[in-house]
Image 1 (cartoon, helix red, strand yellow):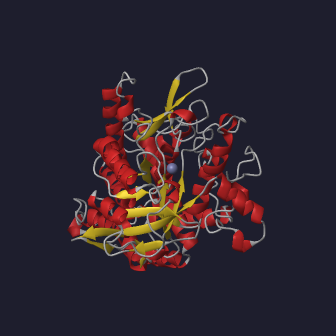
Image 2: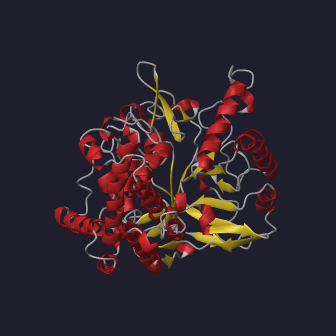
Image 3: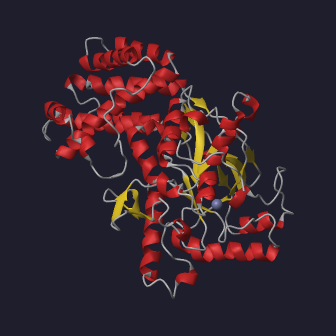
Length: 502
Ligand SMILES: [Zn+2]
């Protein structure tokens, strides 16, 4: 086992503990269930005892439920995803050495199995976790057909939690969205002509991380649009999302993941790439002109967060990533108009395509945001059609078939009434394969399950929305974010105020 694997294994064990603690915090009676399992499963067994002891200790040490014993999660964040930075090594080596087992030791194989099962269970796939354990070579492999008590205890635990699962009411699923995250606030809020736009519609990295922490603590779990409902035989059929009590499903998305030319030198990533670990990462151009690869936008930051908090993702779900086409996608200048001016045009198309596939492989859903960032509801039908066709030609050709559209400006092609087949624009998008349509709505949730489509409102978690909450002060009816986080705790002090909508 390599040193890195050892370290990861120790980290996983800590995560396992933390995950249980979150579950118990949000659903205290699970503790009673787990205690019962502990007693029934044999109080003499040390592993179970350790788990329960850990829970008790942690709750006493951390009355506020903060993850106090955490090793720092990359405090400056700048070196980012995939890099196995100093944090993962420091202070853990001694423990790693003490707990490590040789590769031939059956205990370490059981450990690996338990870890794999735990990861499935952390992602709410209890069936798969139990299945993995009961069909493993270790099941019933002991003397007289007995099973290692650690495996039995894990099975009981997952069976118990599975019994507590409740179906999510899909019409109450919230959907939050972001634009490219500001990595360098001094550059974004530097008083130039773009400052006001960034201040209104962008969110900073630190704000985003605080939002994630708050949503996680409140029990939110990321699901896919395709978990909510799927097309079956021409009809949109409600899906079934099962979560433990206290957990709430949410969808997340990011618009305009194109790293537009105007954003250069303003403190944003420059493009998305595939990191050394096979996961999506971002490039950012440093002050000295060198290119750094790291967690410089939502995608790798969310990957990092889910690595630390696997129970934030339902069965591997990630967010929805939406592209326009007019300056290419993901920071690659792949639009037709760049064919003559971009010397790397063919290679860039290939690279963008590979990154898109990498996103899909890691659970991300991909979406259209129109080709020209047009108001699809009000432009002429001819222009509407031309825009849709251009998106197909220049973007879908790179990223593969896509059935989601996130409307630019949130501008829908109809009012809130159900889409009907007289709606020419809806029918045209349907003919191109779109089944999921998302507008913008500041209500807590808005989901419309149509006969042959799913429509959902999205909430902007940006500078403007946060400022509106702050300006509302104690007027709770005007505050729109309190179910997710308190704007006052998140809003960056580097932002110019007031944030005015222009
Ligand atoms: Zn947009």
